[in-house]
Length: 230
Image (tube, rainbow, N blue to C red; front, side, top):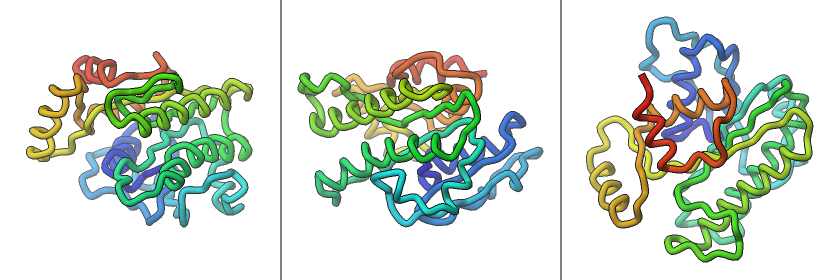
């Protein structure tokens, strides 16, 4: 889900090149097409674009034709927006927490494969312990942590369902020099580890294909794993 953003588009691109992945259902609020920069051997026919009108707060809000697309799914990477400046607190909660839980719920109702792996894309600084007060973006960090906990709790109650959360720092795409500089400054001030989008997506796909190695995957974990990629 969230297939039209920076990370979502790269996940689609890489998925089309991996032989272990036989089909891709890209869920977004606008159509998703195969990128132009596909390498040799990529199979664009594996991609199916599913358009949803909004971030649904419950599984019941998903139309039946969308539900059918999830049948037999082996894994999901759930990516939700981070640019939320114009959203109200209620909207942020619906988008970041309620829609994530609705997502894993509707996919489990659709009859996924076993095991079914659900990877929630969170963010650096997310805090599951709601009694704590994070130093940076406290309310948002607690909300992300609460969303992680809700997703994990859902998975724990359902046989054959596995869940984890990834907490990347700032994500850089190709040629984003100003963003890299800004990220380096923010990283130095907050001790946040940043990561290249290509490497992050390789790691996320490895996790859902071969199994989760840790929960959560912190920004430092992801940075270390990126350096270990061949």
